Length: 101
Image 1 (cartoon, rainbow, N blue to C red):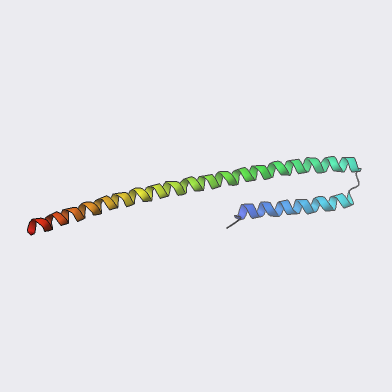
Image 2: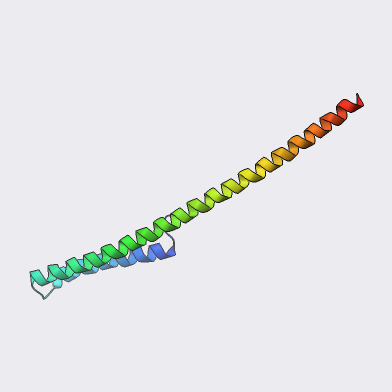
């Protein structure tokens, strides 16, 4: 899934904020300079929030990759042990068969 519930919520908030900012520009009673300053501050705040969310997503992805690597290593170790036991079993069986002949 591309977004989990928290990401979808954040995306909805971001879209709503952008739409609200557009409407506010059209209806703003303040001067252009004051409005632009407020928009710049808001954009910087949202940029910081978006950066934090991206960092969190990257951290979660890194954690998932590390866990997948650990699981793959564990599976490889189990397969190697099973192969070693199987090889030993086959060798013992072959030795018994040679002794009987």
